[in-house]
Image 1 (cartoon, rainbow, N blue to C red):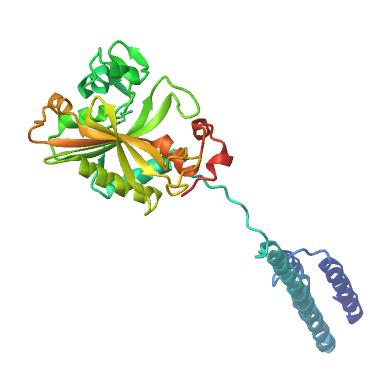
Image 2 (image 1 turned 180 degrees about the horizontal axis):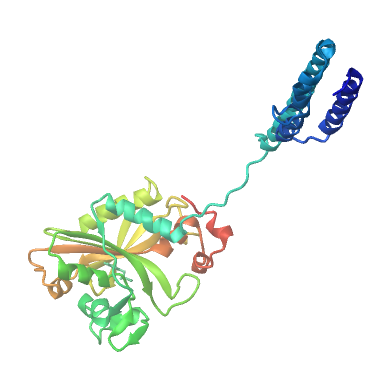
Length: 347
Ligand code: DAH
């Protein structure tokens, strides 16, 4: 550096370079990098100017020093200014992109529900579990013995015609009733017994209210002194919990080979309160299950002494109960998985 005039030219060039370059800087990092070209203590252009002080003649040193210092302060000011501007811009962009409009409608999240039949099955289990029942799940394939013979329905018994059976091979079948589970339980356990047996059953039967596969819930209580009163009391509790406090039950005589006496259980119509309507076909009552006092022969088949013990049993059609409860008139609606139907049923 020879004279002050040359210095002024250098200063003007550096200022131009800074002013021109600063415009295109996009963020703080770029500012930092650009700044280094001028102010890096080792290689920065302004730093170099300062270092060249030593070559300046003594009479010019003061002027030279002042000019370079002014340049340095000016550059620092410009860098600070642009850095602040860019930081503010970055913050604004981040704020915009992260902004949440709490007045926007929420995103609709689809949640799944339990199938209506599962919901009713679970309700039944809850109700009976609160009365001390435990759950035994049997198998869907059975032998003829457990499904029929041990339940007092030998081969030539006319009651076999009550259910159209899917045979798998001679002696083996798809169970037609969860009653088969009663035998398995009583074979393995002496009274007191208090079990509930839910599961799928199968019959060659197909119309608006019947399906080849459906769900039953079996109940069995065996102990000393069990009577029809116990059955009636339990079913009253069931109906009140299921259909409301005003629901009552009535028993009508019926026939099942494995119970004696046998009954059909009706609940007072929960639609009309008993006055008579379409649902109850004007009678005020709706049939909901079959039940009875366990036939002595069934107890004997399981080595339980019928002179000491007695039992009650009941079998509930879970689809039927579901249809009644939710006003569904075709059982197929429960198997078609149409979300418009399923979404309406979530208790
Ligand atoms: N197993 C009978 C059926 O499928 C239902 C039934 C009736 C079960 C009376 C019982 C009972 O335990 O006592 O039609």
